[in-house]
Image (cartoon, rainbow, N blue to C red; front, side, top):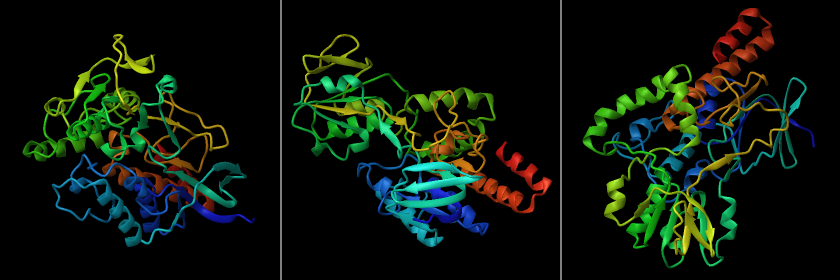
Length: 379
């Protein structure tokens, strides 16, 4: 099959990919977005229905289109999904849904993207698959030793308490997703134990009056202070990437109020088919929910991709120095804490789009000034 030709191929039609596409559209540059889901926003539709964003609607819009909800409200995952779909339609972004990319390889001075029997050649490729696409849920090896009668699922597959079997539940991993799920299970009347290190908690109600005052300060910190350009940001980056975030909406007191048993010991093994804590305690449970994160998978990029100390691609503002024309968007702490949040997608997307435009101009004009500009944008 003859390959299609594109200036830029964006892989992933979530908020990061759409933001890059929006800025390329504004600059009148040609591109196509490939997304494995059947509809734009499906990555949000696949999350548990009770999930609500941790930021208010005022901070949940992408460039050029505010989120259609009261500024202080907190949208559901489904509402975010519908917003992204409407955003792609509003800006007439060329999204091809149901296309799963299975390879990217070098092709002369550019790249070849493969998706089944499809071939797309491009000068630029933007990997905007986010935090969950092309990643594998982490489940410890000893999980295979648990009694077959114990139901196991990862947080990526959790939807509601009715997925669980009758009987007590163990939630492993006590960051904000683990806390949220443990809270919901206990609210549903399921005896629940939450195991894992204390990741801290926000000292205020994110939907309370104090949050309206504090949130602008947190937004400033997430976009301007906690960046790879500051000593504080460089120190925080590996911690943010390697450990789960603090409790946000559900707090320790909330967990206690609904009867969640909070144990700080990690779940470390299996004895007699039952999970065992680090202190030797064996838990008699009917269910285990693994809130243990994800493992990166870049094996589908079929050429050497240098990784940093945290296991993420080495990049500068999204541009990969070792592979001109290759970009990433939506990575955790790509440049700032906000990079993995909705409010950071537009900012990072503009940087990537600006670099692509500058690179394309340098390639067509051959001018030294354009080439220098590419370097400055990547820095």
